[in-house]
Image (cartoon, rainbow, N blue to C red; front, side, top):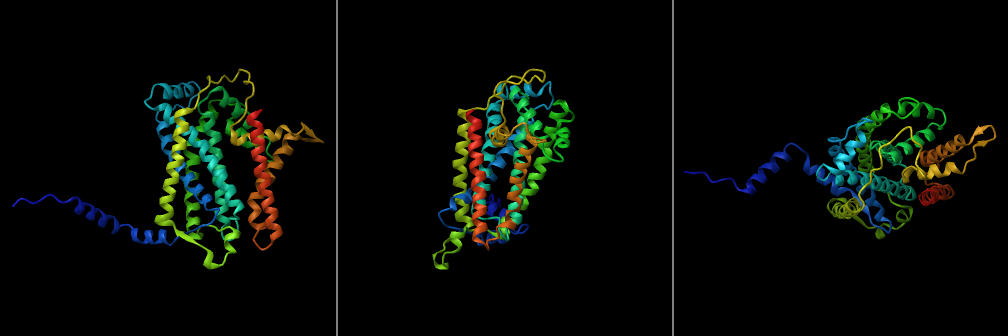
Length: 365
C-alpha cells in the first residue's frame, strides 16, 4: 500500500504545533491584543515610532550590503563608493537608499521626539521611556555624523572637519573627544578607521540595546494620552486594539513611507563629489548636513569674543543648556502645575521654531 503525500494543511499544522510548543505565541498574542491605542485628533503622531523602526530595519539591511564592497581606507574609500555606484548591480540604488533612509530616519525621529514632548509623554511613569528616546536620538545623529565621512569626498571631508572643530569647543571634554575621534590633530586614516568602527559596530550595539529597552518600556506603560484626552469622561474615550487593528494600519503607513523613500532613491540618487584632498582649500559654501545646520548657523551669530570668554564656547554652553532642558523636563513638569506645563510647552515651541528657522536660514544661505 503506497502512502499518500502529506497535505499542505497537515504540514502547516505540524509546523504550527512545533512552534507553539516551544514559544509562548498565544500569550504574546493576548499581550498584543491587550494593548490599547487611544483615538483622538492627535493619534496620527503614534505612527512615527513605527516609521522610525521600519527605517532602522532598512538602514541595517542596506548597510550590511554596502559593507560587502566598501573599503575603509583613504586610498580606496572613494573608489569603492564609485565602484558601488557604477559597477555593482543596483549598487547605486542601495547606496542612495541608505543615504536617503538615514535622512528620513532622523526627520522621523525629530518629529516623533517633539510630538511626544508636546503630548507630555515624559511625565510619570514614562520618564525612562523619554530618556531612552533622547539617547536614541543622539545615537541616530551619531550614525549620521560618522557615516557622512565614509565616502571620503571633498564635501564630507570638510564638513566633518568643521563638525569636529565645533565639537572641540564643547565645555570640559570637547577637545579630548574631538582628538579621540580624529585619532590626532588632523583628519587622517585613523579618523576614517575610527568612524567606520563606530558606525558599523559601536553605534549598532548601542542602538539594538536601547531600542529593545525603549520598546519594552512602551509595552509596559502603554501609549501616552494627551491632557485633552485624559480630561474626557470615560464614556467619551475611544480606544482600538494594537493587534490586529492598529498594527495593520501601521503596516499601511510603512508602505506609504517606503514609497516616499523609494521615490527619493530612484528620482534623486545620492551624489558623490570629487575625492577629498586634505591639503586643498575648502569648497565655497561648505556646510554640514541639514540636521546639524541649526547649531552651525547659531554659532555664526555669536561674536568671536564675549568679554574674556571665546564666543564659540558660550554658544556651545547655550546649546548644552537647551539639551539639558529636555533631560530635566520630567522633573519640572510633573502635571501638577498648569503654569509649569505651559512653560514646558513654550520651551518646546521655542526650540522647535529655532531649529526650523536656523535650518532654513542655513539651507537658503
